Each structure stands twice: as C-alpha cells, then as structure tokens.
Length: 347
Ligand SMILES: *Cc1c(COP(=O)(O)O)cnc(C)c1O
Image 1 (cartoon, rainbow, N blue to C red):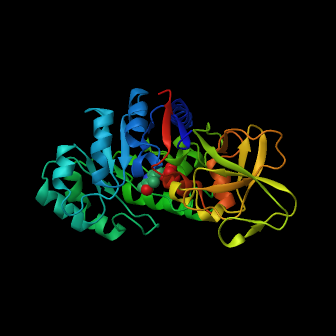
Image 2 (image 1 turned 90 degrees about the vertical axis):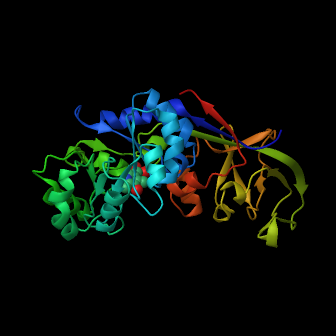
Image 3 (image 1 turned 180 degrees about the horizontal axis):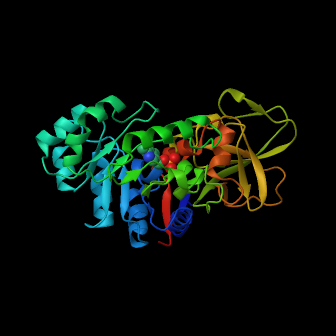
C-alpha cells in the first residue's frame, strides 16, 4: 500500500451544480467557479465534467489558470478571469479566448490598448473593497465602456454566508444603483448569494464552494473521500509519548497506528490532537503532533486495525475537519496536496 487515496466524485459535483441551478429561476444561468485548480480538486477534470453536463460559463482567478480550463471545456463556453487584464496577460487572454473582468480604469485602458475588440466584462466594487471599479470611476467611464459591449457586469458580496448581515442588502442596493436601466448582463451571487434568494440572482450565478460540497451549501452532496493507509502499528506503555515534542502521553496501555499523510499533504498541523479518523463507523482520535508525512492515531479501542482510515468521508466533511483545525473548508480543500493518488468517480 502506497500513497493515501483521494477520491473525487465528479457525479456529486455535477449534482451540486444542478441543485444550485435549480434554486434559481429558469432564465438565470449557473456558472462554475474553477479557480485555484477547482479548489484543489482538478480544474481540467471538474470543468470538463461540468461542461459535459451543460455548464456554459466558467470563472478562474488568474489568466494563467485559463488555458487548462479552455482545453477542458471546448471552444463554445465562456471563461472569465476575476483578476481582469493584468500586465503581460494579453497573449494568454487572446490565445485562450478568456474574458477579463476589468477592475479599474487602468485595466480598461490597458485592455483597450493591448486587445482592442477582445471580449471583456467589468467587475464593480459595491462595498467589499477588494476588487472592482469604484462607483465614481464607473460613473465616469460608463458610457464609453458600454459602447464596447461588455459581456458581463459583476460584483461580489462580502458576507453572503451570513444571511442576516445588513451588508448583503446594502451591496444589493448599490449594485442596482450602479447597473439598473443599462441593459447589461449582470452577476452578483456566489454560493452564499444563490442561497440568499432570487433578488440576488440577476442573470448569472457563479458558485464555487457549493459545487465541491462545502458550506454554506448545507444540502450539498459530499464530494470527497480521503483514505490514509497505515504504515505501522505499535503498542505503547503508560507514560510513553507519541510524536514530536511528546505532546501526547499514554495514560493506559495503548495501540498506536501511524498513517501515511501529514501537513505536507494539506492535513495541517493545527489538526493535531483535534481531528478524528474513521475505521468504518468508528472514530479514532489523532494523538500527538501531525508531522510532515505522518500522523498517529489511538486505535486501542478497535478490535481489528484496518489497512486504512478515512479522514474525509461520510462521517467527517471538509467543514468538520476545518472546524477541528480552526479554519474554513475552503482552506482545507485548496491545501489538499499533490502526493495523493487521485481517483475520479463518474462525470
Ligand atoms: C471565489 C469567488 C466566487 C465563488 O465563491 P464561493 O463562495 O466559493 O461560491 C465567486 N465570485 C468571486 C468574485 C470569487 O472570488
């Protein structure tokens, strides 16, 4: 037995995309956000499966991520770039027919100079103050930009995972104020925005995390199973320690299994002593420090030690594991390392 096995259920990703699409009215399209290698799960595989299922619009963060997605989705689909048109992006945007979402007057000028006539969209800031044109810049350039026929005008919500946050309604009102009456194709909602309801949907929704089974889409189908093989099992006497710095000490005669994955695989050190791994339906606690390639588990209470333990699966979601480590599901997903034996199911 070698590397840990990460199985990625493309059928579940497609089902989650359809379920999110079903929450919107029939005239609203649903895109797929596949930035950061589809949140670490493989942009080519994920985007290809979604394109075959009927997705027609995709989003990446950087132009450099667009080539792999373009290859996977074919010539017809739209591929948008959140970071817009940055220095030296022109040939990548052109060669892969990517649509930059221009974020500033400087990007608009750069795009006009370097790729006149090439499709573009506009990202507006409506209060998050991260990316997007300021209202005053948009007001000044708007008529000029509209003559270039933007493919999409979008903005992003800062607190869509918190439905009661008044910032949601404030950003919605600001987006209306900036875009109403202009006959534009519009997009505001990521996963959280889809769940906020139809006022937030406009023409195109762009979920990411919900496709991959993560919160705030609580009804998502689980997508991942991560199974860690046992390298070695040993008996430990009371008073003996396990792992770096001896942070765990046996209080009883214990049986310890050492598993073949660690923080170099994205199973971050903050999980030490907090996360569980599963032998079928039985949970076993991690003990001692997670190290680079290994972690230790107390298996004393098992009748039989299996060949491998699940750290992600039906009993422990990405969000459960994130909570144990004091972070969010997005970070656990995008940290999953390159050493796993990756197995794609369905799609
Ligand atoms: C990452 C991102 C999304 C997708 O967000 P999720 O919360 O993963 O659904 C949508 N829009 C923008 C601008 C983003 O940066």
